[in-house]
Length: 169
Image (cartoon, rainbow, N blue to C red; front, side, top):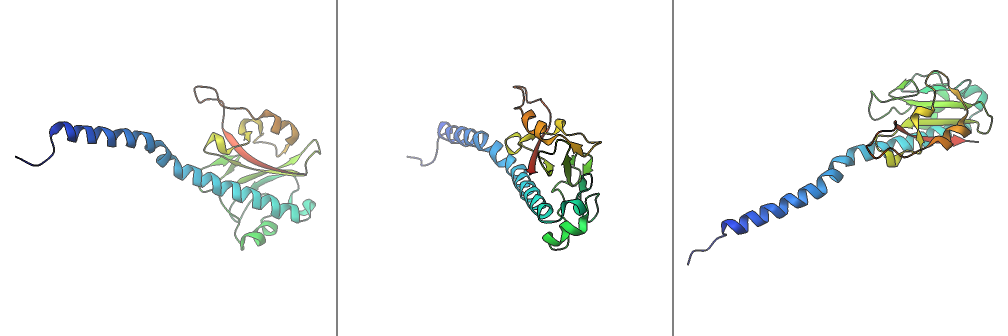
């Protein structure tokens, strides 16, 4: 009697491995994007906290970009809370509100909020506002209207780009 596996047994094992690979591959491939979104969310929250602890008039005049060591929002006031270096977006080419590789800060024309800090999200489930609602050419927006514009993507996956925003009153 010969010992070993039959061709049918080997094919069944290969089929099971294939099914498991197909089931788990999307979650494995999406992990880096989820990690980058988590980092963005942490940065946005920390930037909002840093700016709200400063005198708003000196750090945010008309909103703008917070990116690297430069930006239209006074970087020196924010950098102190980040060990001297303002955080950049994990993807250097990521653009939100005209800010490449950084985070956008909006003042509020309706005066409901003091300001809002925004970052692009790579996954829809990590965002809380549709980026298309934010004007790239003007950092003075009605932030209370923006938060009501958040919608889910269409069934085909279209519907704009999702952002994560922290609004400070």
